[in-house]
Amino acid sequence: MDMKRFLAATLVLALATSMACAKADNKTNEVVLWGKQTAGSGHAKNAKTDGNTVVLTAPATIISVEGDVEGYCIWSIVTPKNRTASSVLCGGKGRKDIIGKTLGPGSYRLIPGLYGKREARVTIKLKKEIPGSRGLRRKHD
Image (cartoon, rainbow, N blue to C red):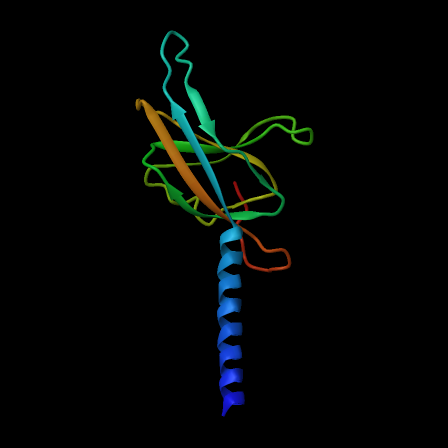
């Protein structure tokens, strides 16, 4: 009887550990890209931008967009390999069509538009593709 309890407890512990590892792997495969713009003053309107730069070594799919902004763009960053910054993907209020789009490997920043507001902020969550997985994905425009 003691051996059955021991085996049952070992099995429960193994299942709990594997489920915790699976949850941790899902969290580490998510990346957050955020951007903020604050209106400036004066003739040139010198607005200030803030946010993070995300470096993707593998493709990542957009899984959520948060923020009440009229528009925003994801920009590629100038690197030694990529000599020019360019707008990669744009979206905005009511446009959830970028969810499900995939960004390829590269460096990216997110810049929201002000459209008459004093400040604008947007956050996008991406899920990195696991190497070796063969899921379907859409290419970015």
